[in-house]
Image (tube, rainbow, N blue to C red; front, side):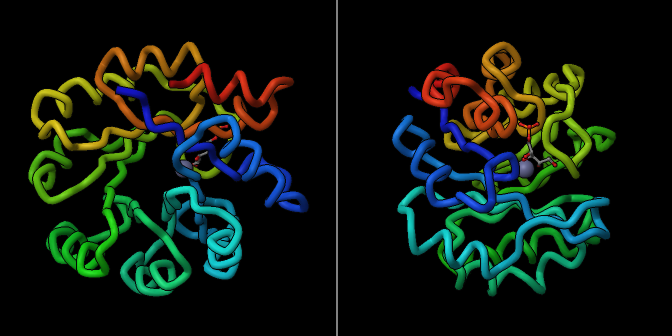
Length: 213
Ligand code: DX5
Ligand code: ZN
């Protein structure tokens, strides 16, 4: 089966966002990765609800919203209304006793749900939730910025997830993904690849997207 390619618009030209979204769609990408940062959970501020709502109007790509924010629960409904198809929150942003409730809450809007871990977080924290989640997102860089170097030791977290999760579990990686690092991740069992700089800074965007399938 083809990998799910989710180009990260963090590396796109925000003044030409519609053009840059069409380009990845024409190249065959199925999803669009939208990095939401609040300046608290990570030291950067990026995209919010109104931008997602505007993107929804101009594309039928599956909108993959990656929340790198504190208090994610407070923003689920606004992002659903804006048109998110899957919302991924960070394990580190939620009290452990509230995680199952948050997963159910996101699912109650009839969208998909993912949970992500940062590089220093052990993969084991995901195990209790694998049957509740549609997707796990393994960060292969410290969240906050595009264009960082892929951390191979993080990718090894995929191995136990592949053996423990169901066939349907989507295993996504994010950070420093290019054709070479994608191959490492898919050999471990990843099937969804987020990629920003590699796609949007490529001389040939079309080939860059296609090299990830
Ligand atoms: C980083 C973001 C990523 C970022 C990836 O915190 O979560 O989605 O856009 O960018 P690249 O592919 O350039 O590492
Ligand atoms: Zn991301």
